[in-house]
Length: 290
Image 1: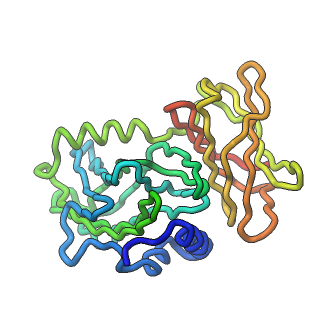
Image 2: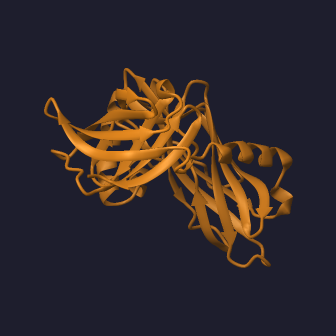
């Protein structure tokens, strides 16, 4: 069996998310092993009827190789961000099979929020490139990057995928087309908030109609109609689409409903990470709730 009805998968995804919070996203790989996999001989590219994945090499700058994980899907299909929404699964990346690799840093472009009959999801449609900064252990010796990646692609059905790919990290595997794709993808990765561009004036938990919400006041939003706020916080909770509750001059105030999977939600004193989408611009803010 290689497909799962969306409602059944949503239920399984929520169970996996709860397990993953206490362990790792690797639990999902065990749960879905054998549904769609890469075979016995990993290469630079993986493909299935629903999705394909390949490693891109954009060359080296100083000691850092600019690598990309390029995922394509059937038209209209989607995959998920590291906070996937209430019915998805975040991607997981296993580099343990690599050779002469010291560090890998995966970055994610600004995601989009999907709201349909299946609930809310956060991620990417049709295609996405995850930039990866790679540093070799010994730059004078050959290096090989090995990735075992678990992710899910969804439309009316969801297909969990296990892909395994490998790539020699050298000048021979780099290309101009890869450099272009990586340049576009890296430009779409949210950056740390700059005080002159945007500032977070306050973060606090509020109760409205018996429901917990995160209230965020921002200064400097240019496109309120195109704004979204993706929230990451410790604990078993999910933050829904923000609602604009007030706007005055350059200050906008947003209220974000919080769903707790394990009971009442208490956010006071917790560190939260906001990824703020202002049109096509993505900015990141780390803060502590009042």
